[in-house]
View (cartoon, rainbow, N blue to C red):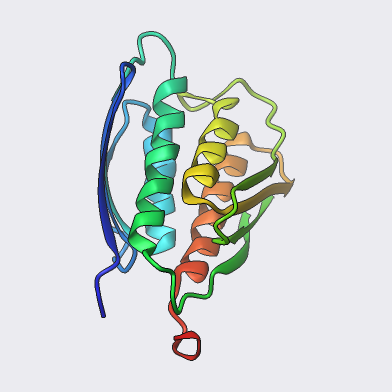
Length: 187
């Protein structure tokens, strides 16, 4: 079978991002965005998705985190779309419920070719680690748009904002892992 990999560069006035994605990986990663909590979430996304991801992002963090976080979402979605190619034989849709201690996150994705995001994740804090929590919506919106996918994410309940964000990334990764999986009956 043909390897499902993609490599991409995105260079703008605000960011310089290089990425490589292997959908049939082993959860290996080399990630550096300059925002450590964001790196950690992308590492968990990679591990739980069973993907290999190499991603280096340099952005105007002295101004704000917005451009870096949003552009990483764009690049990750573009990498996914390119690595999937024709999408023949994949499950296409997937969902996952992710418990994280007292928190439960729900993710559903359809690699339909139509972009849409529904995010229901009220966070009580401005920062989770060093990541501006309001930027999560920008990241997931950029990802959904560039991947041309329906992405639905919800925090059902929970106390810890850290656990909520972590559970969202893990749930999305697991849902995506299934959606990207090949099914011999769908050849």
